Length: 109
Length: 213
Image (cartoon, rainbow over all chains, first blue to last red; front, side, top):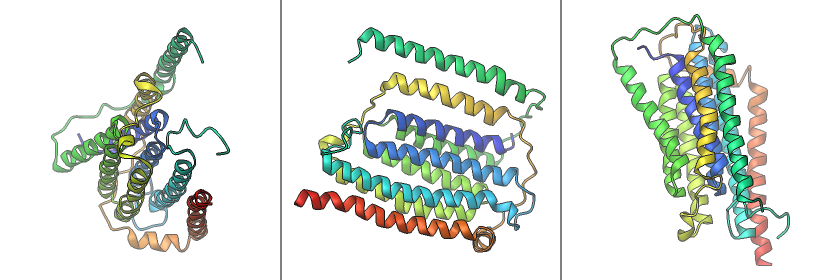
């Protein structure tokens, strides 16, 4: 069977599902961030797959690479999110001596 | 604290809600869309097909490892596998520049950052304390709610697919596009990165100073 759009969308859907389960079930704040990365990657796979199979037929026009450019911006924002998120995790660890997300339930030390 | 019976009732209600959601989506949303779709004909497996299945398997197994592993360090390695697999999928989708960006930014940057955070924040005995708080049951419930619906939408919807063009390099046209049509988002992204840089330093630094004082 010829590999087509649905196959890539299925991979993206599984990445998203595993990511959302990770975000919901992890106690470890770093684990939660990993789940967010998985979700963003699932979305990215969808963007690039749709860009190839549903976009306009040419390859060298701006219209034909819109999805790829969008996924590039997603990658940039994911990097920014990871940096700030991990800085917050470090701050939580130094304040509460733990990165269990359930322990960070106070707005003071 | 809630009583045990109340918790049980809440979980049962959640399970019922999930099943109802899946059934509703299957009968009302996905089913009608899938009608009239031509059955795919099974042909011989070609090399790209086999390659796709191998890479997709790697990706999904990595993602499952992130979710299921008890050890946060193994989760990080699962994430590495998943990100590498996604990068390989981008190559198969003729997105070479995105694939390289994925490798450089995600695997070279984000993953190393995550590993640093794991090493900095967990004592060795603490590394294993990353088990689930929702419990296995809640996780499975959430997966059952999310995965089948998304998968059936992906696999059954009759997408209007155009025959894809041959694989071609895209770096040149992406460069042109980023500096002409998408110039404003490009510049905003650079501002976001700058503020992220400053913000991350500020957030991570303040507490150290407070601790020293």
